[in-house]
Length: 439
Ligand SMILES: Cc1ncc(COP(=O)(O)O)c(C=O)c1O
Image (cartoon, rainbow, N blue to C red):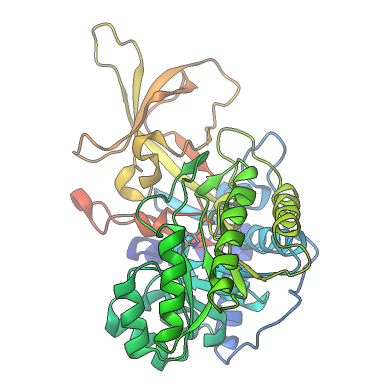
């Protein structure tokens, strides 16, 4: 299903195209049918359905994932457009479930809320971390029962907490006294977990400062939760998104265990640790395998909690959908500025306002491929198409593109399945939002 009007127009064009695109349509239609069938509540499954990997993964050299490459070879798409291979999503989910067999996986819907992705993950037994009523309603609409939802945003309107509670959600995050009071007022007896501050060292997209509170304050808040008639369930943290330093989970767990002990001294037995996300996509630098993450986390849990293991939740977003997506874009202009800077400026039809927001401060460095790969390259500044000088993707990071690249050429931006479509502006400069298709 396409995510924008432009996309919807394109979809009807595709349906009249070649066999391959028709095939992809059928895959997509199956997903839609599955999503319709899934509208009745799906009971929580444990252990997860670990599907044998039917997904065709990107090669070691990291080009386009094969199914996406075949689709793009014939599909008539608007440009730019994100293409997501939902089989890779399922593969990534299953790999994580295998690596952390005792954890419950709550997919972070914010990473990519496409219907086909939510529906496929629901069918595999995933639970869902949600940030808003929009995401809660989306999951409920796919037949996910409310006991598989967590309202994980620490910043919620009281009326949204009340609405979520009315719809059956009973698990809420908080990191402040005022938020706890709201939950106590409108979601009595719910399970609540406190988020603690993290430094997020080593993460390419840190989630520090804004979320969480100091551990001492967290202990007080958990005691307060009990006084307010809530169920003090546990502790959550996020080590930062695209976290490739595996020791960070152990550091966070060492802090968590101290908090468990402090709260136990005050008469409350916590039961759950929510370890957030941090699992990676493969951008320009190599990343540890999901198996390595699983091992680091399992070892850290054993070292810190010994025989008294808590329930464990993880909330992966990027690690599930990032590598499953490719943005197909087009070169609009190649130019130079004169003077001493001899670099070419390559302007694409996709930019910071079309979903590539994580290029802010050049934090996330996507891999690019073009039809001219293998030819001579030279350094470039890469920018988007809008009349905003902030719309520059990479100026400091060393990006090189083929010298032969000209306007009209395609540029494929790899591992863009996470945090792109939802970041896209509605109509900045009159450009439509990033279209997307799941195959
Ligand atoms: C509460 C929460 N959980 C999970 C995630 C997903 O993190 P990641 O994409 O690193 O897996 C986020 C990301 O913002 C988050 O805020």
